[in-house]
Image 1 (cartoon, rainbow, N blue to C red):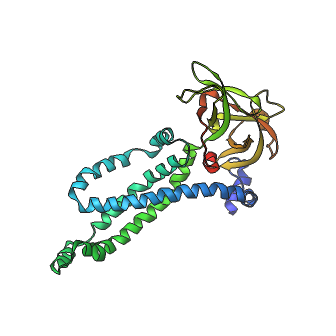
Image 2: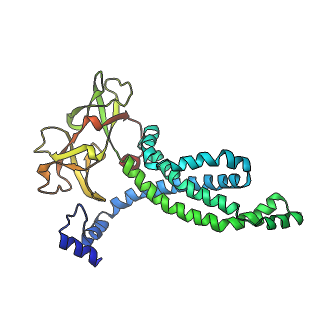
Image 3: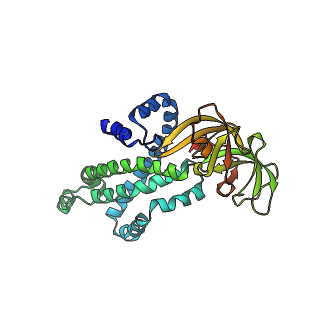
Length: 312
């Protein structure tokens, strides 16, 4: 703790790169409710992803360990899948499943599945063949052999794999949130163009956006999907245009300094700041305007979704 504090003082490290211990502990107390709200979403992703891994990897490991045919047919494709970088396929999950919790759970399963599968295969194969011959000579059935001998012998190895996968699950969920972080803003389609559409957001702000590959009707309600790094926030008095909103809080995600801005009930995370704002920090309650980059925004159908999913 002392080294942390001293390093910031000696090297004059700005707070948006590395906040000091005092600032961190203060925010843990003042933003406890906000942190808990977001932590619940992450914990849900971890538990769902890890739970799916447990109920699929262990039975599949048993099948591969006991069936030579399954080992020849199933194991090689799984090995090839493990060689593919998970971050490389994460954008595909966003395209297939959207920015909701489903894509993050699937990425968590993908990153935690293989370690537990290997542990399960090793555990179910660890039994000495001489013990199997002994139980067979004593008249034990296959189920009795599995229940009283093979399964108990495999448990230490399986629990070791569970511990490894549980550690990876937390990392996987956080990585998935970074990859799939998005803001959803309610808008209305007001103009159709050959490429894309024009939508109207709160306060009458209009902007051209990517249509998302869908056919839209005039007046159709929609959700504008935005990435934090694609946005610019300016003080309302200085900004000539943009979507008006109100600052809720200032947060840090690693080295990223973000603002949470309320726009018509939707919470946006905005990262990029204009030069005019570097002189001072925005405070909760400040009125701002968010500039949107049309090239990096996508329009989605306005379907009911959970508030926590929208934040992620």
